[in-house]
Image 1 (tube, rainbow, N blue to C red):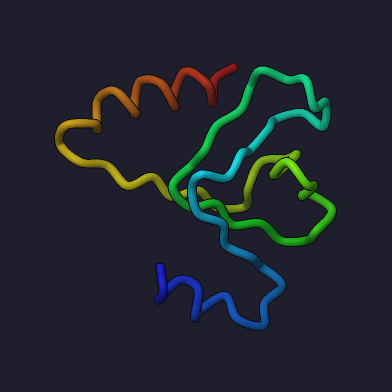
Image 2: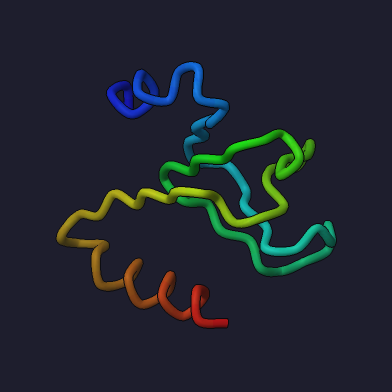
Length: 81
């Protein structure tokens, strides 16, 4: 994460680590909330006090052999909705 953070300095992009809620609707009552391991946003207009209200510019998930299939199936289903 440090290498990515160093590359983003001065670009206007900001990195957030889990637990950080990413909602795919500005509606605070939405039930579509995910917490990627790393989320990168550009611009404060996508953020509020509860987390993010839009899709990140970049998402990084860190998988282990034990969690890879479970996370892959769950995250792919959400991204197709």
